[in-house]
Image (cartoon, rainbow, N blue to C red):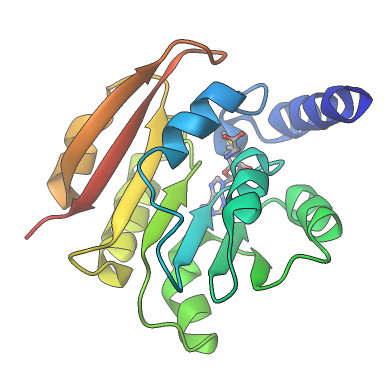
Length: 193
Ligand SMILES: C[S@@+](CC[C@H](N)C(=O)[O-])C[C@H]1O[C@@H](n2cnc3c(N)ncnc32)[C@H](O)[C@@H]1O
């Protein structure tokens, strides 16, 4: 409980410091986390998962719990404090790599790690509050690292950005999660043909 309160306080501090890039006052709920992971099949062998913008690691910890021998998780977080805390928290986790970087550099990160296939990209990037040009850049570069099978999974507090997503991706499914502050939509996409 104390740990959770500390995590929430830390998150609020980061939000106050960088409101647009953090984009939320507190971390996502366990209900939103479960909903995001409902689009994945973590029983598949040799999974490669990329997580964008983990913040304090709400999704990361659940992904790590579900990881098996042979799976790889690449986590990309531009905020120095969040990246440092995640590295400390997940120090013993096997095949989990935390990069303090911008997600627009994902393809370089994957190349350096000799990874040429990604199964899931799970994104916490607050597309509604970052500049439109950055959103377009992230989506364009994300498409380039996706195969026809890769799923891009994200959440948004409104459906306002759906049309921007649709310029780059095909929306496969969208679900509403009431039990989150604020309530949110999870969206599962694949790249346009
Ligand atoms: C709303 S928080 C999401 C945190 C977590 N996934 C959750 O749901 O609780 C958004 C995170 O995305 C990170 N972020 C925003 N833009 C980014 C970028 N271009 N590259 C990497 N991380 C970014 C922020 O630093 C922040 O930690």
